[in-house]
Structures are given as C-alpha cells and as structure tokens.
Length: 499
Ligand code: C2O
Ligand code: CU
Image (cartoon, rainbow, N blue to C red; front, side):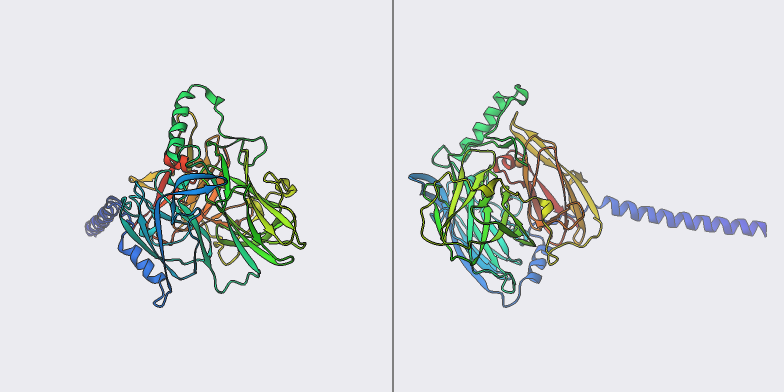
C-alpha cells in the first residue's frame, strides 16, 4: 500500500508538473508574442467606420485648395498660404452622422495634410503626416472621406510643420438636428495670432526661437518670452512669439467685423482659438457669457464674465444683449500686448475704439472646476484599466520640448479597445501647454468628479491635470501640445491601440 501510495503521488506530482510546464509555456508564449499595433489603415479601423456610417448617410462634398495667396490684414497686404484664398478658410458645416468628403488640392510648395481637430473620425483620415497618411505632395490632390459622428464646434488646419501659423485653418461646425438648446442666432468667432507675411514667416519665427534658445543657453532663468504677465492662471510666461496682430475671423481691431443681433434675442457664440502661440481671454462688454459647450461637447450651462482659450480649445456661449447698441467682444492676448475684437451690433451707436477694455475682462474667469459634463457625454465613474503618467518637459534654453508617457515593449502608450485609460499630465516646465488628444475626447478629472469632456486641456507650469478616456476608436493617435512651436520641436507622442 505505501508503495502504491507513493507511486500515485509521483504520478500526480508528474501530472501537476506537466500541467504547470504547459501553463508556463502558454504564459511565455503569450508574453513573447508582442502586442500587434493597430496601424491607421488596419481592417479594424475600416470596420469601426463601417459601423458608424449609416447606409443613407448624407455626403457633403467640399473642395479645399491650399495655395500661396495674398490677404488683407488690417490695412496691409500679407503674402501667406490659405485655403480657397481666404483667411479663415471656408466654414464647413454639416449634421452629425453626415459624411464629409473633402477634396484637397495641394498647390503649396510643401507637403500638406489636414487635421479635423476634435472630430472622432477614422484614424486613416486624421491628417497626421506619416502616422495616419503619407503627406500630400506639392501639386497632388487627396480626398478625405469620413463620418462626422458628433455635433459640436471644431476646426480644420494643416498638420505639417508650422503651417498652422500661416492662414491654413477654418471652422468646422457640426449641428445636432435633435439638440434642444434654444437660441435665435449664432456666430462663429475664430481667433488667431498673425505674423505671416508681415513679420517674416512661421519658419523664420521657429529658427529665431531655436537660435535665441542656443544663445541664451547659459543665462539660466534670464530668458523672457513674448508673453509676460503677473497674474495669469497660465503662469508668468504665456508665449514665445511676438505677433503684430491678433485676429477675429481674419479682422484686426481697427477694422472689426460687425455681427448683427436683435435686442433681447439669445445669440450662440462659437469661439475657436486657432492661434499658434497665444491664449485668449474673451469677454463681451455689457453681458455675461453662459457657457454651454467646451471643445464641442455639452456642459451644464454656467455663467461667467470671461473665458480663457488655449490654442486648440473651443467654447460655446449664449449671450443676450437687452439694449440696442454696439458691444465689443474682446479676445485679449493673455500676457501679451494686443487683442482681437468683434462687434455685436443691436442698434445705432458709435463703435468702441480698437483698444476697448470691457470691465468683464477682469471679472469672473471660468475655470475647469466650474464645468460639469452634460450627462449625455459624461463617462461613468468606473476606475481606469490603465494609467499613464505623462511627463511634459523642455524649456527655452535650447528650445526643445517633449512629452513622454512611456513605452511597453517599445510601443508608446499601448491601449486596448474598450479600456478606460487615465492620463496624468504632469508639467515639469516653466510654461503652460495646451495638450490635445486626437481621435477621442477625454473627461477632465476635477475634484468631486464629473469635469468637462474636451479634447484639449491647458496644463499650467509645474501643475498636473488628470484626464480619462474610453478607448473606442482604434488607430494610432497623436497626443501633443497645441503650441505649434512646442509640437514642432518635440512635444508630441502617440497613443497606440494594440490587439
Ligand atoms: Cu489641432 Cu494635432 O492638432
Ligand atoms: Cu507647449
């Protein structure tokens, strides 16, 4: 008996060993098979788009011709690059669920791609050179075609080099036919900082920053950027580049656009910051702003005097001007000298001067903590499946910037479809950065939860912002600073879907 018992033991032990060995081999096998990175032209990208596209979807056809041109900036002619010879480019407008089919003719002397900023679109139409597509060569054409799934205020712009700081941008407005927001009229206000053709080119501005950075390399903290301010939530150094003009819908404050309104009606303002190196603090003289959307996504309406828009951010607000008159919508360049102005005219009256400073500009300034996502777009309160600590690095000394969320097996920030992903954006630099994620929005995690759903968020110097997103749009997606000079000198990385 004892002997048989022993033998039985041995058999069991051998069996267990064999099972463990097989298990080990399986574990090793799954570990050593590297995760498969989902490329932008992967079958799963196409399948996801097929699910989004209704068989009877309306197709909106547009043509954007990018070419050198001359535009009127104030009382000067500026040689620049623009879409369809206008700055901003034409407003593209469609309904949620429609298909945008944009034929792009590149008549620039450089390659081009167009990014549809904030749209949750198929990865191969996202317009990032070499990541989502090969750039469109000079003289070539390319047709973008994708479903625009969600309503909101967006814009489109070149995603090559520092071309954004030319005139290569325009508004993209997506209506929700079922939206219950009540208003009588709406205007799009697209803000920009302008130097092209009047103070060199963006490429010259970039090489100036790089050579200044070199020569200031051993001056420690002595470098001063273009934007100096004592009391901005963005810190004391708000920008690197000097701009002769700040524009609202392509117009200077000397020659402001007049937007007609009727006393008492509710006007929706869609404000977009398409600048390259300038944040704008926006206020309307004579009325408060009721903010309804951030970066196209609805929030619980909240009243404020002023909003601060980093590059790439959008805010929608309702305003009501009860009296007849002329009211200045002022976008003050944060920490810089100058502003962009548009006028809301509800009656006769003299226009305010170009340097008008409405009291509201220094009134209540909206913060992220004031914003709560509309339940229609809010994430649930589940815990993240995956968290990345994302380091923002760099400085003026050598004019090099970076963003690093780490890698797994050589793959930058892998995520799997269906996961809830948390990014802790940690700014280790002396400047603020508007951080933009392509392909899907995130919800800002504010104290008490429920922060706004956005695609671009400002991270103040040495501050930290946590955002969560649900990985539901397979592809390779850029995460970068929307200061085009920071992005161009290294402040960009990729979030990689893997299978
Ligand atoms: Cu509007 Cu990658 O940016
Ligand atoms: Cu930056």
